[in-house]
Image (cartoon, rainbow, N blue to C red):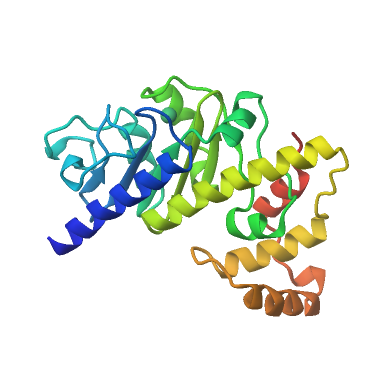
Length: 250
Ligand SMILES: [Zn+2]
């Protein structure tokens, strides 16, 4: 029960941060935590994510059926259920509409360009899922092929979903996506974009796979960069994701 309380407080805290950062307006967005193999803690619908109380949360089973809580569960519960089903490693999910990243998603742009080394290490690439009506299988069908390979996905004409080994990790990824979208926009405005080369991206992906789930420190990055330099390129495992990142075009 103490853990249940901790999870509720974490949802309240990260909901408030989503609101304070302007990542959601009005009653937008939703957050969830995997409590155990059969229970999820999810935010309710029709409430500002900046003003939730621990008692507002809803507990559902893995079919989305409400087991406890007075409020109605988020209409996006289907998206959360799909992500937990496809990714046993995921324990927290955040969905929001951060304005810059959502602007990319509304303009038909993904955030796959390798412009910033730490984003490549932390997230790899950030693809764009085709549009689907919220709360329907159209949306989950569009996300399904991307979920196994990414921790952050832009949803066309809608917003962003991020997920991780904890709610905190999912929330941090949302901040990274919005921050990176701002950088990508400034880079585009300056008109002299210089994306990292394929070899550099490959080295960063090596680090990424070594630290899956945990964010490496700058010292980790330095020592890994040295180790990667020692490797012959033939020693580097061919990796679909790195090819996709380096080769993707807007
Ligand atoms: Zn939404």
